[in-house]
Image 1 (cartoon, rainbow, N blue to C red):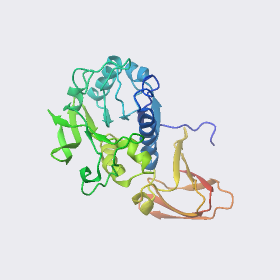
Image 2: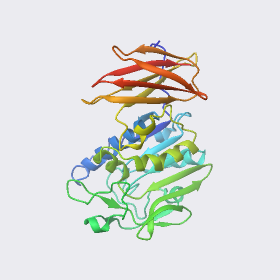
Image 3: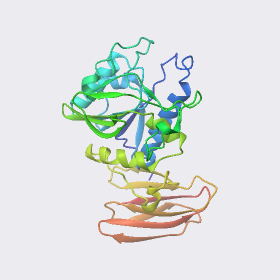
Length: 309
């Protein structure tokens, strides 16, 4: 059943491997945290990501990719930026966080930010960043878990001036989240180190709640929901999906911790469910409208795999 099943990632995450001076500038750790956090927020939101590099974006992303994430993509060259621009113009959605297109990949600073012609795509102008170097400077509710900056864990926010973008969330009078329509698509700018903070904080439900409607409007829907677990910083159960040529879906649920977890998974548009793997796992299933709800107790490092039609 697994041999001819495949992943169908609809979200692409830029993995920049060619920024050779990042370590010298003290931001290698921030880059790694941002890239990891961007992929992880997708998995926790139950959508399937894939990594892409600059050349893949410049050549044109596959047609099934609907959302492109740019985690701490502070060094983008012109060919990559043209690929981003064309992706959005044709109807794709791009989401970037602090700080997009500040430099070129060879270390030259752009005269204006975002550079490489991305100002029109995101509909904002970038000024000098704001550093959260004291807790009094953080947002009052701080639902996104922005941290106080340190050398080991820098926490900053781009000071943005909207040109055509609309401000969705603001902090101290400047956009914290800005959304812009460009061509047939949309571009969202998260002004702080959102993806890195997601990694540092071991998740964050607020960022997922912010991104999920953007995913949905781009046509990317979660393949499962975990009920109350989705309200936690991280759901605690890893999920994945494979698709078979005959239309069936294969879902896997893994408890990757030392503590037992209760699984309650709502699988959309399901009429029949069959267990493929899960030694020692007893589960129940019941119809709920057009969905099937699966309940099970997963012991430490235990997994359950089911096929759904």
